Length: 317
Image 1 (cartoon, rainbow, N blue to C red):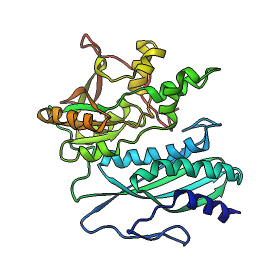
Image 2 (image 1 turned 90 degrees about the horizontal axis):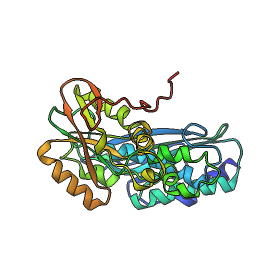
Image 3 (image 1 turned 30 degrees about the horizontal axis):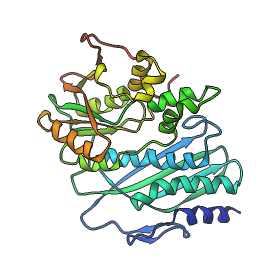
């Protein structure tokens, strides 16, 4: 039964790539890293009840499990190539395997990303994906390059996914479909990350909340950041269904948006914005890098604003 289920996944996700010497079917995959390329590797685990609510559609789980990993590659400016999938489920439900594999493949196909192996086992529903991508030597975007005077920018809009999670508590979620879609099917900004190579000085994806994730850039770069709350990009769907104060707190600390937050020299901010606008995701200037440490959020009067939530922490009390 286990190997039948693995074969179901293989059939849905099969992609032919010349650099895959041996994919699914042996004890390990064999791949060939192209000459003159460095390998970027990321892994994330999604757990039912933590990263997605019970009852989430299998196709949405498959999409999101890959999307959060592709977002990590995007933050490095990497080009996706291969993935591994480890799936733990409470039972051998063929329809669930088909649905998950279809959602995974729907996102993987445009990137020609090949699923080259993995594992299946029985237990609480957990999905782990590891992705591999390529960068040119020395071109990977890091968290450690931000410099005082840089502009801080972010792609897309913030807060939708956290708001979508809140909306799932409603008896009728149909009015909030756009927000729930952002929660279930985030868009990894792969092309944006690649376009930022040579422009951005530091980059991170917004998974745990803007303030929390931007804090990682501050720590790695040894700088501080001032964020202007009024500049944060928020979608019309978010502002339609939530008060301004709630929308702001979702944007600052909600997480699960998987947008890219990056720093760029002030004289290159216009070029970065125009480049990402051509890609369709756009980028908004939200603050600046300053001397000091950590992230300060400033209101329209220049006073420090304390967000209602600091961001996601798996091991917070």
